[in-house]
Length: 102
Image (cartoon, rainbow, N blue to C red; front, top):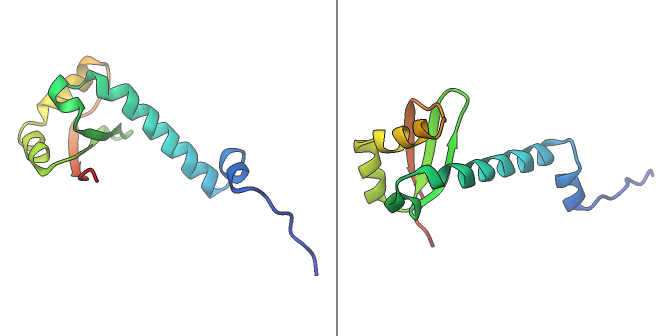
């Protein structure tokens, strides 16, 4: 019976070219995008944002920590879209998700 070479999970994720590595790179890209975009948002909103990314089709996906903020932003998406536009980010649609902090 032929033995397979064992690899560490960390190496598979960071150095690999498979699906795990692709997933890790995408997660890192989105995390970096969130860190770069959150500072351009209005001050009161920043502390409630858990995730913010903009897809290639111009959809900004924003995850906030409460339904109250979700409702507020769905009612007035211009708050986020205008802030992103001022930072040079082209987004025309806002999708808001809620993920309560634990």
